[in-house]
Each structure stands twice: as C-alpha cells, then as structure tokens.
Length: 508
Ligand SMILES: Cc1cc2nc3c(=O)[nH]c(=O)nc-3n(C[C@H](O)[C@H](O)[C@H](O)COP(=O)(O)OP(=O)(O)OC[C@H]3O[C@@H](n4cnc5c(N)ncnc54)[C@H](O)[C@@H]3O)c2cc1C
Image (cartoon, rainbow, N blue to C red; front, side):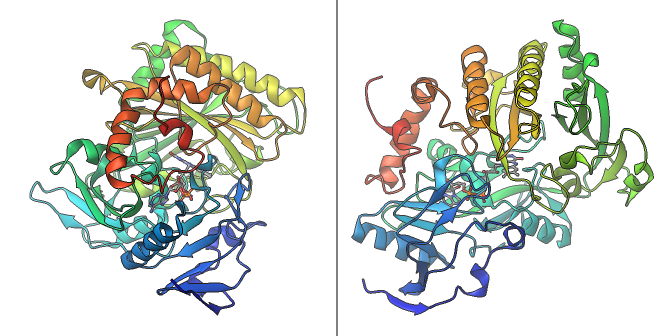
C-alpha cells in the first residue's frame, strides 16, 4: 500500500486538547510530517509520552482515524506489514498497556455520541465512540430531554471511554461496580478487520470478556452504556475532616462503624495526606471523608461559598480547594473533583498512582488493619527524605464486586457478588524519589496478605513477583480471555509487552 506525505502540520483536531495544552509536556509530540494511507492520517517516528510523562514510545506509525472504515484500513496495514497495534486515548495510564513501537492508534477523533434510547423496560442507554471524553458525555446527557447521567464514573473529566472501558475503571459508587458493568453492548474491530458486536444475549461469556478486554480483542469502535435519569435523585455531598482515631483505632469497632457508613451511602471516599501542615513533618491525625447520599432535594448552587473561610483550612496545595460542608448537586457534578492542584480536570501536578483492590471481611477489620499499616508506611516514606517526598497521598473507594471476569475486583463466587471491595490508591507526585519501589512493595504486601489485585491501568508491572501471582490468581479467567481472544486475534496483533507475559500459554 502506498502512502502520501501530504500534510506538514497536524490538522487542528489533532492539536493537544485543552487539558494537555496547559501541560509543559504535551502527550503527543507532534512534529514530523503527516502522511495519509487510504484517507487515514498518521505520523512516523514521533515521540509519544503518557500524561504523567513516565512512559514514552516512538511508534513506527501513530494513526489518527476518524471513522470505522479508517480502523479497518489500519488493521489491513498492520496485517500486510506484520505490525502490532495498540490504541491510546489521553494517556492517563501508568502501566505500559498503550505502549508499542509498531502502530499506535489515537482514538481521540472518534467521539460520536448517538441519541440516547429508551428501552422497553423504561431504562435509558447511550451508544458512544471510544474517543468521547467524560466531560463531553456529561454535557451531552445533561442537555438531553430528559437529562441523563452515568450513575458513577472516574474522578477526572478528561479521560476517554476507550481507556475507561477496556481497563475496567471505576468511580466511588458502591452499587455501580465498574463503568464496564453498565455496558449492554460493545463493538470491536478484530484482527481480521471484521466488526464483532458483543452482547449478553448473543454470547454471555464473550460479552463478559469484551466488557473489560484490556485492548486485546481489537480496536473498540463503540459501546452502549446504561444511564440514570437525573430526575431520579440528586446527591448530597458531605465533606468532613475526621479524627483518624474515630475509625482507625483498631479492633472491629472502627471497621463496623465504617461499614455502616459505607452501606448507608451512595458513595464514600477517603483521602489522607501524611502531614498536618504543608512543609512541616507533624503527622496528620485527621483524614478527609467524602460521602454522597441520594436525595430528592433540589440541587443548590454555590453553597460551598458559605464554608469558604471555615476551619479547617487545608494548606496542602493539592487539596486547597477542599471545604468542609454539605451541598446538594446533580449526579455528574458530584462525581468529579481534582486532587492534582487548582484548576479544571486534571490540574498541573503530575502523579504516580499504584492502586489495588481486595475483598473486605464482614466487619471491615482487614481494611482498618491495612490502612493503619499504610498510614505508618506512608508517613515513614514521606518523612524519611523530607521535603523531596512531601507530595504523597492515599485515597480509598468502596465498591461492590464487579461481574466482569477481568475486573481487578471481580468475585469468583456468584453468591459473594454483594461483597464490598476497597480500592486503595497510593499516590505521589511524579518526581517523588523512590516512589515506584515504595508503592510496588506496598502492593506486593497486600497481594500476599489480602489477595489484592492491582488496577490494570496504574503502576503494577514493577511489583516484585507480580506475573506468577497474577497468572495463578487469574488462571481460569485468563483461559477464558485467551479462548475468546484466539477467535478474534489468532496472530497476537494486539498483544504488547505489558500483556504477553500474562497471556503466554505455559505450564505454571
Ligand atoms: C489524574 C488521574 C485520575 C484518575 N482517576 C481514576 C479513577 O477515578 N478511576 C479509575 O478507575 N481510574 C482512574 N485513572 C486511571 C484512568 O482512568 C485510566 O488510566 C484510563 O485508562 C485512562 O484513559 P485514557 O483515555 O487516558 O486512556 P489511555 O491511558 O490512553 O489508554 C488506556 C488503555 O486503553 C486502551 N484503549 C483506549 N481506547 C481503546 C480502543 N478504542 N480500543 C482498544 N483499546 C483502547 C489503550 O490501548 C490502553 O491500553 C486516573 C488517571 C489519572 C491520570
């Protein structure tokens, strides 16, 4: 196939998005001339970095498709030239899942949103292409008549659905599980360039795998998500700064208190930073508690203004926008907030994030034990090389088990589906010395002690002994994934170095 170098500057739609425009290092280092193959533009030899600027790659071709037909052209090119293909959205992942030296496909121009549909059961769904950003869908659904929303979602608004769905991302909604758990249909272009529509009715096992497919079944074209009418309820967001001692004093008392709170809320989230005052080493004896409760009360505007000068004042730059208080908001307005500094979407502080989930005991005592140990370790880490390691933070959400096989909080026992999992994030500013080793050792400890599983999109590849442990724990699920995958990609076109060690069929 011949290609024509025709464009020497990227089309306007390929320029960095509003979010990346404010960054000192844009995700796509556009510079080399653009070429076109059968109407699909691509650049060659450009350097790609992820959002956090912790990963880079120089793919042979970086494609910018606009249509379904464009995706099929890319697959045909990859087949002819025997190349690997990995997609990329806004590069907000820390694992090497998007990385390839062959063909990288930016799905950012594929952002069509269909009109929402009301099903026979009265439930609403929407079909979207995978380049749609969280904020774009939120705004589209808000303007719909009737206004609609996703019941739960990831924290930032500048992440694309391709990344959210393939990686099994989640919000804080207890009953919402992962965003992929809300899918009713997903369409993927496989290694033959064919369109495969997956649905529960058609083949429930293949559909289950397709819902969290890790980018291994092909290029996801579009997906249909379940929605909630905004008129059904609003959320009362309650922020408080609680003494650690009231929940984390050990024993089962604190765990049971926390359990009562989590089960009574739509969503619950904990944030903790190790020092009481910014640039001082005194240990923080409080944690930030965010709770969301469903309410029929009308949404209020600007109510937090009245808490503006109320204690406590958080002087930590990453949390300076936090205010103690209560406010009723529409669903999408409560789900997103920023822990990377002032500003919209993901702010200016580039982070590392290692995250893992494990099942909570009926009295939540394993979480209380784990969090107490983590507080100590994090304080020790952050204080031992002060102030270089000052910007660390811990974050926790609680979700019911996912029903999707490849979710990192899937539960194999069907009757345990109502089990609650904690998802704990260990966060640090990107330049924090020693953070990767520290966070990966912490996760290794949780894998041993609590049978924790790491979030696929975050830091997990450096966890000591992670591959044998994941192969053991996901054994039956990897067998199902491989079975479905081999029908769609017998050539391993979509397998890169992140996934190969997990997928290889060997006796261990
Ligand atoms: C500040 C910040 C906050 C975050 N908060 C949360 C959170 O609240 N909850 C949570 O679960 N995660 C969270 N994450 C992680 C984030 O949601 C995931 O990393 C997500 O995958 C990023 O989406 P992206 O558009 O940047 O995708 P990328 O990182 O660019 O891609 C992720 C993966 O998706 C695959 N992919 C994308 N599109 C397609 C497609 N069309 N077909 C096949 N494969 C595709 C890529 O190959 C890659 O493997 C956060 C990340 C950051 C940086």
